[in-house]
Image (tube, rainbow, N blue to C red; front, side):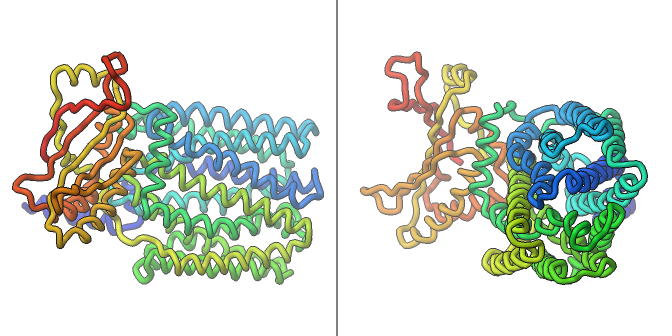
Length: 559
């Protein structure tokens, strides 16, 4: 009994501490390797941004550096997320990081030989962006394998802090290397840092564990399932809207910072590195203080605070022309950035079940990088057409719109229990049908029959329509409810699933939170037995009269 109490106390202490994930050796190793890799990426980005200011006088060309690194992530995140949920993630990470090391080495060689051009630089960054797009959803989907669920929020916050520690260290090193050795050595250093990531995943074989134990999905169907989940998950949709509205306007100071440092403030590569270091320092300070802040502010309050601070940062950058003062402003920018980024990321993570985590995070990353790429291009073109201060003021005005969106669509609060409930009984199958379904036939029609007191029909239908999101989110592509014209209060719920295997996956995807919603629906049922469930499947194409128009029952049971 004493041991049990002691263990419980230790567990509670670990859960309470924001540093608890570091007690996991695997988390500490992967976190450190990712930190080293991200430092290299920031060194590369500092070199690329500064190099472009030498290769071209166009603000749009300079902004295209950020577009090139983010556009592939916007375009490829969803396929990458589908891969994260269905392939050997360890092999994927090892292969892609080898590719990224080769690209960085090639960039360094081309720069050192004087062969680098604006087009070649953008092309190399696009290729590096493809590699990043393939790895980001995979890396984020690994969090539940590294720590207990009770530590997931802390792990996400520490991952965000690690990214910003690298933002504090990488630009400073990158600026120093650019000033002393030349831009080419930034790219060589980036190539070297990928070895740390490769070594970590060579050592940890746990990344090979698949996200789901179900039959692997084909890439196309896996992508459709991810999109279907996002389209019918209101909490995730609200998070995506809020994140996108922020990143669209906040991208301005990332896209225009090289121009602000060099042309508006007259600084060199070292000063540019200092500005990015200040961003990182502010972000790290905010990440450390976030657990304390969250005790006083909700997730929504933290998000709004970051929004207001980012708007003030843009206004300051448009007006202040003192190098030291701008460095301080960028510290505030980093704190605001990490507050919003961590809050949005944690909210997305806590509303994603394991089976679709990679794809859900891919949709989040698509919104993130899509908004960043679009915003960067917009602010670069606007700065070319008018001036940098005008572009910054316009971005601040768009931030005001994002603040209005915050009052219209606040973030979801709480953490639903997304553990699989496994409460759906397996359907009864005839011997012949069991053999036939081995070929994964479809589509499948599922019907549920309810008997409801007529006076309760309005409340029943409202609860059922709310629960319909679960049907559509977890596998159905069509849902409906019908009332019997002859028997008052008799309703038939129906939904279609593409195939029998997909319906089996649907059984395993229902969470405990979904089970609670289903219980709210079934409390209106007044029949002597539980609602009757029936399954129908399109006849085998080889069968006489087989096809869509003839459905054969394959058994029924009571839910």
